[in-house]
Image (tube, rainbow, N blue to C red; front, top):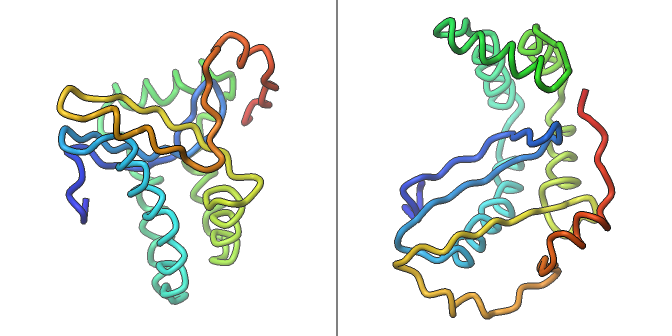
Length: 172
């Protein structure tokens, strides 16, 4: 949001069909998706500076804030019910997941967060996997996307791609 590139900007952990991932989402009527992807990549690459400048006390403050958020009471019965149903649908049955995550968070050192970032979020790590979904609005020029990107695998035949892909294990 600092760069004002879109009217919806967020990032969060994301579970799709029991596969854990991390989602960056930017919706904009002014910029094309290729440009926005470049800005997301710049943001990800800039996180290393943020980590380097983060002292231990600040890191602990972030952890404490996240722990408090995890332990917040559900604001309504609807939220609580959806949380339970999510566990049932995913066949995980961890109805105390927030408490477990909060407890685990206490023991995570800054170096582990930095290692996770370097291994799974930052390219060119061999473990970094990305799926970019781009939707072109009527105010953008799709011809601007003709610039080939490095290490991009365009999926032309979805059925063939699905048949050739390995299944991921469940996250439970």
